[in-house]
Image 1 (cartoon, helix red, strand yellow):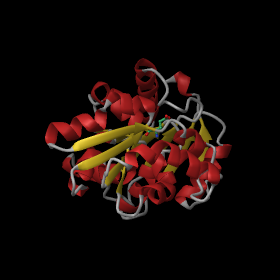
Image 2 (spheres, helix red, strand yellow; image 1 turned 45 degrees about the vertical axis):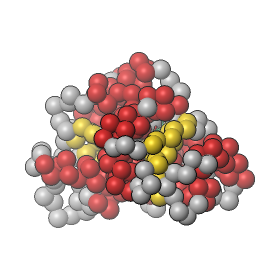
Image 3 (cartoon, helix red, strand yellow; image 1 turned 180 degrees about the horizontal axis):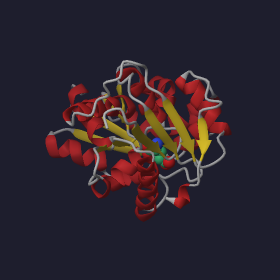
Length: 269
Ligand code: DGL
């Protein structure tokens, strides 16, 4: 079981921000990634639809014999964590690990959270933080960020990127936050542009990185860390044409993705 792969899923490219960190934090683990590119975005869908999609994503990963599931999607974790967590194998979303890191990072107790509309309406990050600490949490949904990333428009100097980021973040800037949670796994792909808008004094908390660390700890607690010496493999599956995914994922992960992406019919699961 220890040498079975870790299953990671997201609505599209966003979960790759967790995969990128896993490749360096868990270098001997095999990874199976599913990006639901045929049904992205999840963040503007109803809770029932998001739960149904997430169950199918998990069923697909389980059919591949994974030893653990990572919902590398802020939206799924925000609206369906409780519903999904009773699996027969370890499961984690991204919200809890990210909150822990943000609470450690803030000095002035003012934390911003950005995410999809479904994530922000669920108040998932705010609820966890304010139940543990007397901190102020300011929330903002940024519904155009996911389509920008999925379309490959991510350059920090691109006028459209700068304008969109300014439009969503200008009010948060006035709230004096010293820590900003990137509450959607797509957002670290826009990290440089977000940092430029917020200023260098604001610490950005990347849910991908925190989740990779949390995944390592959870595997270790369950005695499931790989005991291989060789470098792990990564396989990628999508539910629509792999072309755009291949281009952006390759750039983002710094590897040639040409032969490693397969298309599947997620509705079968
Ligand atoms: N990466 C997903 C998240 O973390 C994007 C959700 C969407 O598809 O809207 O929320």
